Amino acid sequence: MSSLIDIDTATRAVASARAVVCAGGSETAYVRVGRGDPIVLVVDDVDAVSTQGLLETLSARYVVFAAAPRLRGEDLTRWLAGFIEALGVNEGNVMVLVATTEGVARD
Image 1 (spheres, rainbow, N blue to C red):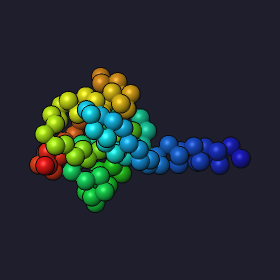
Image 2: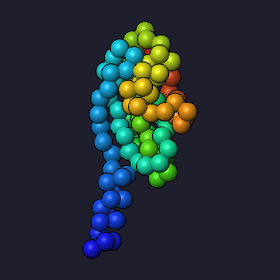
Image 3: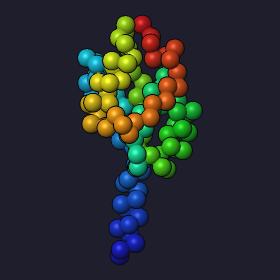
């Protein structure tokens, strides 16, 4: 019975979840997956095949918070600070990967 509990716990630890937070004055949808130290991943599309592959790889070692903010004239740095704060992630433990800057700064 103990092994079933261990398997179930491990499965839940890597299951993905979708949520929304208010960051930098705008609502931001994000995906959370994995376990371990946090990584914030800023991408153009969280559902893109390339992003999904990256999430799968990173989530084996890290808890990944992936977002594709739709910023309209907002400063990416301001948004990112608000996003990290809304997540409650310690800034000292965050690694930011900007996969695309063109798509993030759309009108």
